[in-house]
Length: 133
Image (cartoon, rainbow, N blue to C red; front, side, top):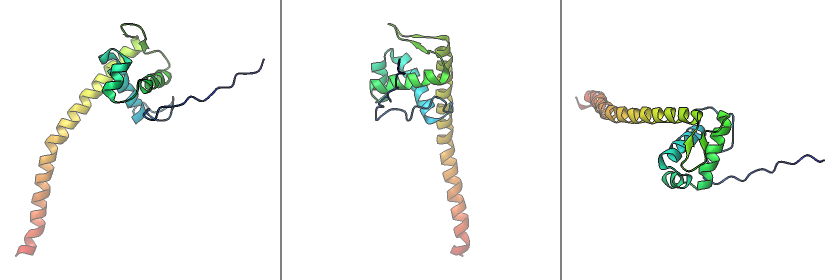
């Protein structure tokens, strides 16, 4: 019996990038897939997650499959309602922690920006003082 030849799957234009099941967990594709899992859970469906992420439902499915392949286990039981597996619960916990860290970083950077701008103006004024005299 001849061996079956694997046919390459087509990817959506808005997919998270090349299918790399061994990508680093903090790579943009892995982060996008983790965020996608969080949206699926929060929205309760692949369709609403796709709408919220502004991608196709097919891309949502591909991102979840890629994340499951990377982790090596099923993360979400595709039933009604959707149910997280223990591994999925762990990843959701970390996705929420990442969101909080990102939010804290954005807040801190906004607070830092005026102080940096003020210091830059002072440095520029000091640099121009010798020219004024």
